[in-house]
Image 1 (cartoon, chains in turn yellow, orange, purple):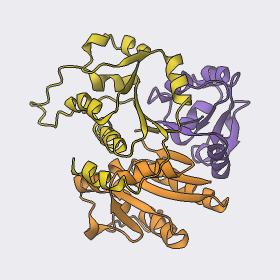
Image 2 (cartoon, chains in turn blue, green, red):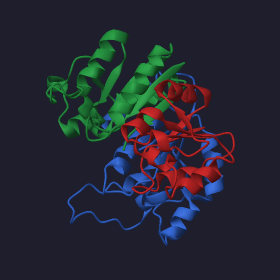
Image 3 (cartoon, helix red, strand yellow):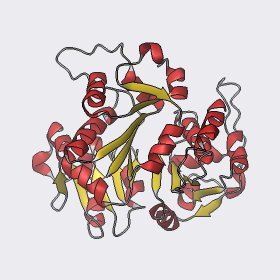
Image 4 (tube, one colour):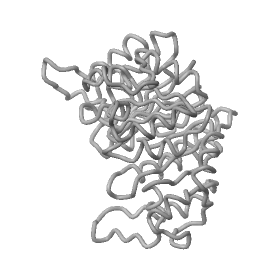
Length: 135
Length: 119
Length: 99
């Protein structure tokens, strides 16, 4: 995480402005890089003291599934990083109920505590943001 | 208005780079400011100086370089995404610079609008 | 909020997902392959027409033309060019791209 260290140096120059950033995750992990590289943006944003929340809907909910074992694929297992988010003061993780149900996933199968919300509630959460970044 | 752009896909494979470029030009023509164009994921491939598309097709990389030259547009390639994909200083096209992901977050903070183009 | 969708409704669920999160006051802009959803007689016509009861739906003209669709746009879908795209971005407090 050397990028984070660099960015912490920039904090001194960073704006006093605090915006509500929502990072929207709609893609499954491993099949594409968007989950991993999306997470890297979230970690950097923490260094800028912004009001950060993460939304998981559609296949994005798969990113939070417990028990991901990547040894046979020989790819980085970045799922533990979701547990580290709390240490970066990123604690608002919203997961869409309809997306979980469609995929037969129960909340206890997720590897971090989250707030399960309906699509309607997610809509309101999204509308309340200042910046939305999806990958 | 200050508008930031995030481009997540490389040239030609996806329409993202084209859509973003047309959007940027239209925004500039209307008197808006493009605060930054940030290239992430495969979007870093928009910055390769080694591109040589067929003569009868558009040169996407050159389009970006020209935008930087004519309007001073800040074209930023993510260092980590670039390293992953072999986009480094040595093969960077004119007008681009390599920097950290913080530049994307900063674009979100400093711009009035952030528009994402991707797959 | 300006919702931007860029994929065909037959390739991805992005349009469906978008419409499930687009409320009154928002707008939907179809660009790139998503403009196929704006054509008369396609299976997404129903959802698009229903959405238009609550909010405006736009389609990017150059993308329609490139795909040979310009003459077949669903009534009520507003065709805009890149300049109109910029205006939509400026008009709405923020945009969300459903990729």
